Image (cartoon, rainbow, N blue to C red; front, side):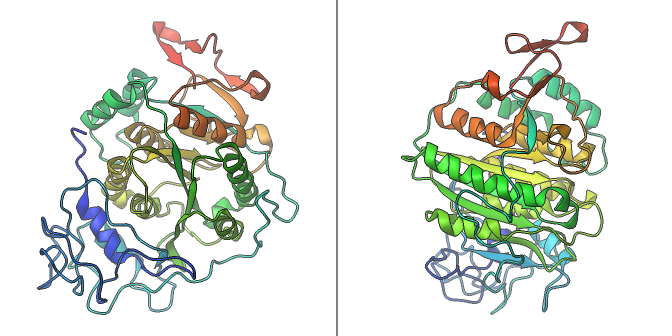
Length: 435
């Protein structure tokens, strides 16, 4: 798409950082620096501004044995990765959060991979909880309780541009240009084709501030996974999980690539607990960069990433966040952010910019459930409030069929604004379209 060419520097750098071997029974597809692997690809060199060692990936036919980010051939699909993690400052032998951030952003001093370096396979998931089964038990925490509103900035693009103009001066605002958003709108405002297969990844902030809602989110997602699995039985669906914290935690990002065995996904999802974080901002830009590097299938597949957080990226990582959102766009992933309690203006701006750019929609948890701390009311004028599980199932249905549908009237808890026949009249003669 014009204005948003693939960012192979970011994707290649992430591929260098990630661990390659998966858990028993899975096959990793990305070889680590310092190990023998598949031949390097021909094309442009790896990360710009990062010294490449002689024979590094990026030269045609290279063995992949030297350090440096893999180069691209200009193809639309990056090399897939296995399972793994990026450790944080507190992890034994960790490289360090600030260095990792610089390298993922492409601006680090020389990169971090090297020789036989790199990261180990994924450690066991932190947390208890057990598998809980596909129905999603979590020690008695029920699913179907959280409530959410939803909003589509591509259906309200003029309002989005006004909102963006008001908020773009925020410290840490991702530097995504208005032209990039206009180019995205030119695509996402057109009718969408139906899809036959389904890839879904969850990108979840697991820091301590998420503790007020984590138990409920875990149960919700386990139940939603089961409902989608039973609804779209012929979609050959696959699920992946990316969890993240911040640079001074035991891990920054930990991920489990796509599974065809739903029980394997359920086991990993059920084990997640909240902890760590420390300050308010976290490291979502690194988690989203990893999400873009997962083993997504081709154009006949609905590709969705549901990203849940209550906090933004660090201000200094704004450019990296923008690159991560572009990377999702470039592999055809539609981002569905879900703002949790405590989300601020920068979180909303980043989420809405990412959803608009990638063709997703913005979701936001509400106080109607009575769960968690207070939820900020976003700057959207017209919305339906439903249960989170109903909203997510509707989003999947809209994506799979290519056809918009409103919530079932029985599912609507309340409305924001006064939608009539799918629209809200605003002051000044403007009209908002509800989603």
